[in-house]
Length: 285
Ligand code: CAA
Image (tube, rainbow, N blue to C red):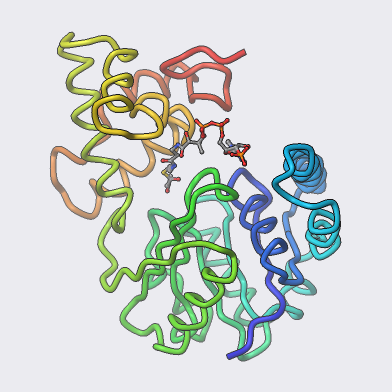
């Protein structure tokens, strides 16, 4: 299975950086979104990111130009899908929307095209049937910020073929990522399952008044060697996303400890979603 052209669906935080990673890996990449405004914002951010890498001497001007040249945009799903060998869907985390997208992809993408979802909460088996080609469907889960984080979880469902797993794994390697194979569709896969446990303990410590969020974060950084403390990281990921992941995990596991924590619910209700809204556990200006 030769992958040459990639379609990334969704120009949000994840999709835009996944698309740029694909272009940097040398793939002809289309970033598709129904919103022309989101596409324009993505282009501006990625051009700025590339310029800063060039200024820091971490990317040559030629490499930046090549990647930006390989990255095109479209608001039309069907015509973009018709050109793709691999689709990475990074649209909103809603089952009904993903089902619609996968049904459209099943019609519009070439018969050989692999259809992957970046979803962290919806296992691909939920949307595989809609595509009509379940053996070519899997999760390909990137981490935020996707241009920086190395790990990609490749999650197979019961029908995913070995050839699909192998092709997606090869793509991840060509993006200079570190693929890991998840053999069972458990809620949260590997990383979010571990992150959930750390967040839960951190939130419990703060709620019990054991320490300030600043000191809990400092402890994670300086005692455990984490690049960010759990509160800083939740602000980066988005507290609405943390809330959503917890709900989705709880729905699947039924474990009380997986339920969204009261401190998260409180923040989300107050519209304090983290960096993206200007305030979460910390203020951002
Ligand atoms: N987009 C692109 N690049 C970024 C970036 C962003 N949002 N934020 C930082 N970077 C780049 C910087 O440009 C810098 O690049 P160079 O080293 O090449 O100059 C590099 O990352 C380091 O950045 P900084 O020096 O500004 O700051 P830092 O050293 O603290 O690193 C960080 C920032 C990479 C985010 C680091 O703190 C980190 O790794 N944090 C943990 C992130 C993490 O755990 N992510 C997973 C979240 S869970 C998830 O995504 C799953 C899900 O389903 C929700």
